[in-house]
Length: 169
Length: 284
Image (tube, rainbow over all chains, first blue to last red; front, side, top):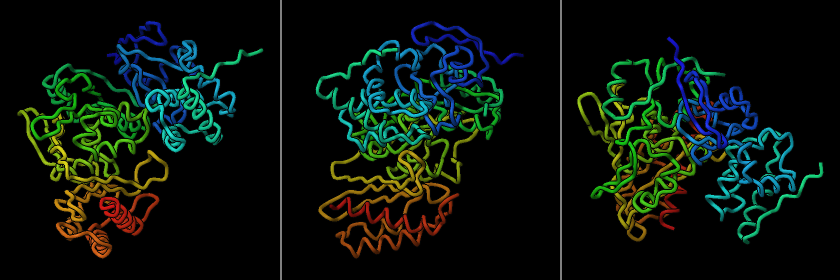
């Protein structure tokens, strides 16, 4: 008897049908089956946050969520959110502040930061630090990440948006 | 690491879930938020034959006020508690505790009931439910039963839930206007499990506290109340001498146990630190 289950979900706006084993967690499904390499897999036990994706509008740990649980859900990854422009000002601020070194944590950091900017726009620097403490940057580049998030919070508080500079390459 | 293979089912009603649980036997495991379970599966610390996903059960959802009780469904997430106006109004202790639970991406999925049923001695909700004198509503093959938080937490990761039962909801007496709260935990990184933590609840009139519950967590095999310290403080004007006496009593009556990085003596010391800070905060 096969344990495989049929699932349907929307990933970055596209309907996806698949047949998967229940033990397959969401990030393996996204990376291995759908070839979306933006969500990264770090610790696989919920500590590092590299696997952060959105399910039904909320950030979650993609390694602590089964693909079968996402049946019927709307899933968004860094790829889809980049394309829609939802993260544009955060991404621009991350670049301006050099808030990345190797970049492995960046997709998770950006998704976590986006939920903070949306839910708690009045956050202090201390609160930003607490919020992103769930995302490891093993290059330990936290300071510039906090700077970048603060820049977005301050810009949005003034009703401004950090506009992306067009890349030359 | 990857989880071992298992089957998966998602029942639509409590009765169906209970029947499935009875049929699948002890190798089956309930999953709600799964924020602890998935980590243990990935590490192969547990290898259930089947996961029964209970997130469709309406009986387990929602936060509501019924008479003088706040009903919190087992499926209510940590984020829902963190963001709930009803919780802020009627159970401010929970509001204060919620941001300490892991991180937002985990709080978005992890549930109130899952945390209680798992009975982790380092977790926030078991301690809060004890401090707030909560009652657990449990569904089983023979219908519903109720049990107080005091009798619910038995030992390390052990509650009075039977393998064929499901935690449905919790009832908490709603806070009165003279009730005061303090929640604090000492952790290496914000969001990590506490080295030691405290939840204080009391009625306050001037500098006199009464009907106190001083609950500590991450110091013993279950959350634990410092009953002698509570009795010492109860009904007397709180001053430095009384605080020092309560701290001494709490350190003496709670037999803490060591964890992988902190000795029992360290925890004993921190119990006093937390109680002193808490009591000073409550009368400040």
